[in-house]
Image (cartoon, rainbow, N blue to C red; front, side, top):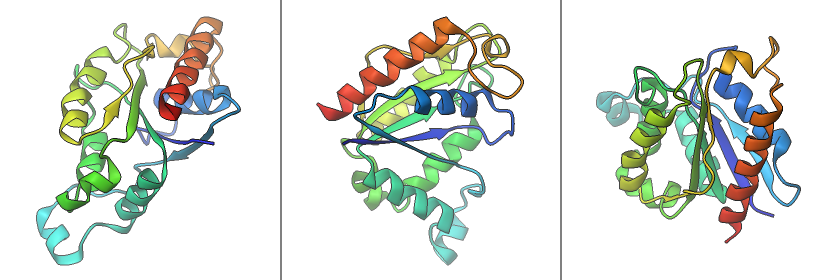
Length: 183
């Protein structure tokens, strides 16, 4: 049974992307196992810190979880029409040392999804991630996309996905990605 590790690119308590990730986990097909991880607590990248102390323990543990998974799902916010700095910073730590990139990312099936309160549905953020994913040598999923716009209208106050159309899109998205991971 393939394992897909999902990471929400926001640590905000009421994050739409964390809510979307929880919904995707619930909607995943029975023939794959979804796990989640967080970027919370990963410090700003600092080459001096890396040199003196190595990769921070939270980043090292996340690297190992990604390396053990068959697929990686990044659920990304969109800030100022691009990828969020905190999420990119976490990925930057996960590439240290650079000799570890093939173990963590090389050939790994990867998918992008995202939710935003705006009208664009994180299309620009997801597009910006493609350059990063290419240089890391991942195997991106270009099947059915998941771009959730007007997120305040599709999640309730507790962060549950309430919109039937988006639920159907999310279910088809994760089913397609799970099949891609298995291929």
